[in-house]
Image (cartoon, rainbow, N blue to C red; front, side):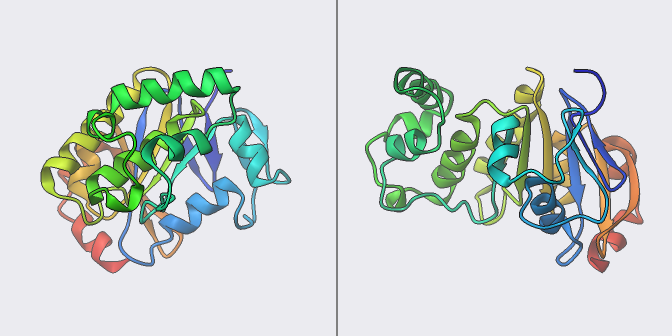
Length: 220
């Protein structure tokens, strides 16, 4: 496929890049992610992988190759780490088991506790589990909503360090985040939202050096 992986409302994301979606509370970041997933309508087309998916259900969009890490993690608290991963995959039983082992190897903090109930995990472990669940179906586009919220600095650093590595394999990542400095450190480009509209775009370096960005973020 040529062209962007995602096009919506003036935003385009290409394969192999991490784009930071920035804005304060109420800026519209979550609403935009929900529109991409199909949870809410958009006035214009939603283009995924070169086709208009505006009439498609959430399930069809996920099947096309969209992964989602929601704000607040939302893991299945009563299931084990392994069961959470298995429940998220649409692959055959044998392939599902193989992918679970891959995720446990990719995220050592999960590999150490594969039979632990999710509610017993730390916040950082739950966030890694949410990310591993999203990766179980090998998405071509990964949407992440405020993944660093409430996490310790070392866990945040580990999480954000992984994103460019994943994008290097061809996956596109759209990272919605209030903490602009952290997000831009992991991204190649940034898009700033205010009241649901794109008000600024630029390279990560350009936005990181922009003194006005803090005002835009504070304004929502």
